[in-house]
Length: 595
Ligand code: G6P
Image 1 (cartoon, helix red, strand yellow):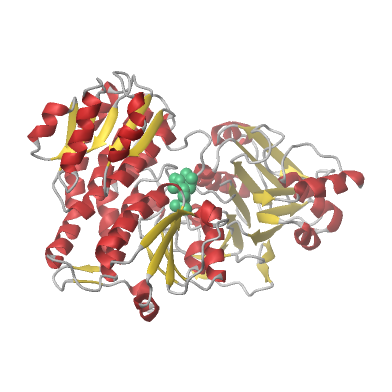
Image 2: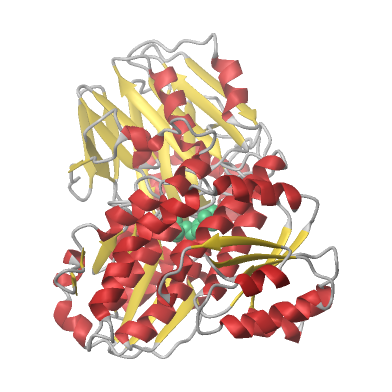
């Protein structure tokens, strides 16, 4: 949420910062800006509403001299509408301080009132501007002490040119360490290919970066390798990141399973959990906590844990968990699922669970992120950077890791254990065969393009699949799509069904197949159009549904990994056919670092 970029070094900083903002645009795109002071203290502040293309036009003919400290920002509005005044960087009264911020200053109203009394002039409605005036009034460090809330800050001064002041509390900030140069970014993806070493600032850490020195404290900064392939953060030949990321599915799943799944030996190895293996054996209840798409993968995880690990499991929205008064029981494990590893609600829930001394585990994609660091043990997805705002490949890899974890916990191996592991290993190939049929989905998306309401139905493992399919469609197409459990449909949503309200049914051949068929009969009887995702060879469904997309047969607990693919593709084509920017859907942000 909100992208921050900064540079101080011998190169010309403005194009570098702008290019890095482009890589971060998925974090926010309602307004953007850059600011710099050269070594003589000459400054420029350029900002505009809208996506980065608008900013690019404004900076096209501008140059920043070498040795100039540059900061930039791409915004996702929290306080104040997206307009030029509210865009970052923000300035103090005299334009001697420029500041970019990610996070929320919770006490900004009180601070603003007291600063106004001291004679400060405000130009925007944002909480961030308060920080610029605070720094003006009290200086950098004392200003930080007055802020309640979360921040990642990068500040430059006219009177102290050639330096970037940085600080982090609650919102991520990374410093890229180069040869006589430093980069600042809210996400390490932006630094891939530019530096090999980074410092993930810890909460409470702050510092000053100048041409050839770096002073970070109070905790000693830890320099870590940056291991992101810059290619992965490029679209390549695909028109959108979202499509590229859906098509990466087979490889992503292979990376999640590599070295962990050993069907020939009949075992699952998870190095990240070895350190807590003894404690894991004592876990008698599992709580899974996450938001958005990660929450839906958690719902699949719940069924997997019940079926294989035989551990009672409850999935909770992280934002709700924080304020619930759940009894704390020793022996409860808390599993946090997050693609970004920075989602504020999930992080806050994790801190609560850590305070309660629960065994906290993570399934995280972003290496080195806050959730990865603060959980006691965990498993990385290894899905590579996910840039499309609507999560696709991360969901798939979460399902892969959850399946592995549930098997890792599996005390008595279930019947046909080895065959099941072999089937899991075959899923990437089966996904590949679905992707080969993507044109069929495009044709279906065209056919259904006229509808503005959709019901997504599924049962068992396919209930969360239906929820996630509906979420994908609403995120990028802005049409109403509701996911429902097949059996619940008759208790309400059936009232909506008529010839203008299609149902997308996940109705593969499994334990609840016949039940789903009955639910679909009820829809047919009310003239509701049906698009079914069904198992290859199923003739019965062809008679009932208006359209069918066939997927290969697999074991029921693995079905979600196959069935989600056509739903992701359907949302993608639907959104693009309606002319939307599916990589940057309106009002959304990739990494939500505010509550
Ligand atoms: C945002 C994103 C969603 C994502 C959710 C949780 O809302 O737009 O795509 O599922 O955050 O993110 P996380 O990084 O914790 O998985």
